[in-house]
Length: 285
Image 1: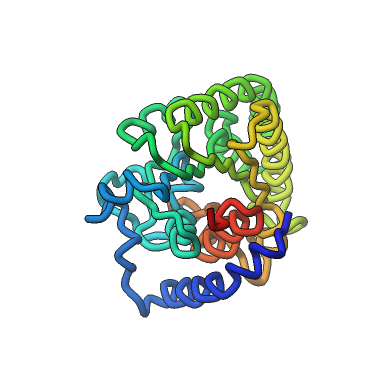
Image 2 (image 1 turned 135 degrees about the vertical axis):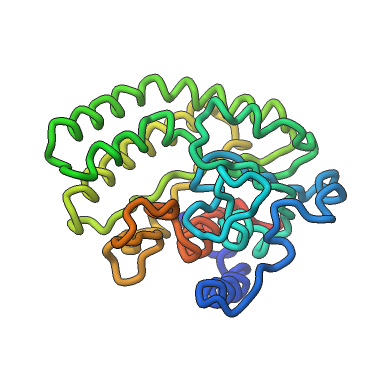
């Protein structure tokens, strides 16, 4: 949902971010200092009222926007263009660390919270896709979306959603209890494909919709304004794989590229970061 006052305040900054994104994609700029996962100012910012920590899986780590930082290569954290980096650019919140990791499920969130300053003011996270079997669905359906193997994987994933809801509720409660001053933004997963682009895409889009319903319901069950569901579907609309300007990385010549099926630099800046602005999460305090 668009907040006109907040959007008008941040549009000039988002315009600058778009220029920065284009430059990064063209390879004409080096990473800004704040793009590093751990900077010299981190300790000072962590104790401030504007400290920001990102948690969750590959959609928050920035897997679709290489190159990656080298602190933990398996996590595939973008060095320059994850949405937490862009959120830092367009808001007063200062990113102290992006602890998200590729392949992370709800079970990994306690470890990601270890050592985070209790005075942290903002948390953003994407989590639940791995719990629901998104990787298994993708692997099972890639060869033939109409196959019984694909259909079985989808049925298993849907069955997991009823188990996922209490896991998500427990995870959100853990984050809120560990960081009592933090505003917590739970972001949805965007549809990855242009509708009608491919049978596989339509299958995966439907699975994403079901997952997002479970996530939204879990946030609603918390019944606290501190935990906010951010629906990114509007910002990613018309920008799936197969569209004229896709917000996702996809290399058809290398179907196993790590970045594939994840938001690229445009998706992180004009998709995820813009959704945080439009929903008022990044407004000035």
